[in-house]
Length: 239
Image (cartoon, rainbow, N blue to C red; front, side):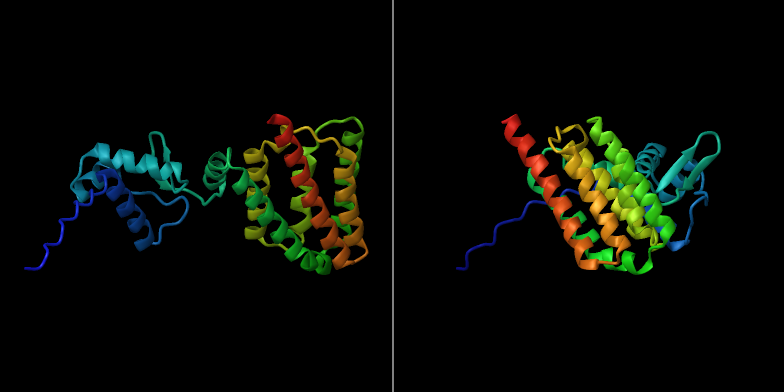
C-alpha cells in the first residue's frame, strides 16, 4: 500500500485590507489615473467592494505610506505625484545596523557615478564647472574650520550629473547619497582627514575641467575608498 501524502497546512488568506489595497492599486492602473485624480468616496468604495469602511480606510492609509495616495481633509482621496521619499525613508531605516548592506550601498554609488562620469565630461558646460568649483571651495573653508560639509557634499554629487538632464539618474544619486549617510550615520562620524575629503572633490572637478575621463574616474574611486576608510576607523573605535 502506497504511503499517504501528508496534508499540507492551509495557507493563511491575506488580510482583508491588504486585498482592498491591491484592488485599489488595480483600479488606479485600469483607469490610468494620474497624480491629482480623485478616487471615489470612501463609502462608495466600501459599497462597491462589499467590505466595511474600516477595511477601506486601512487600505488607503497603507497606500498613503507608500506614497501612492494622499488624503485631503474635507475633500477626498487623490492619487499622489510619484516620489522616491517613502522608498528612501524605508531604505535608510532598514540599513541602519547592517554594515554589509551599507557597504553594498556605497559600492552601488561608486559604480553608478564612475560608470557615468564619461557622459558628464562629454556634456558639462563652464557654468556647471564654475558651480562645482564654488561648492568645493566652501568645502575647503569648512574643512579648515573642522566643520561638517554634508550639505555641500550632497550638492556636489547632484551638480556632477545635472548636465545629463536625466531626472531618474538625479533621483537615484540623491536617494543613494541620503540613504547611505542616514544608514551609516556618516555625517556624525569623526573624519580625521577632512582636507583630504575636500581634496578628493577638488581633484574630481579639475579632472572634469581637463576632460580627463580616466583621471576623473580614478579620483572618484579614491573618494569612495576614503569614505570606506572613515567608516572602518569609526567602527574599530566603537568596538
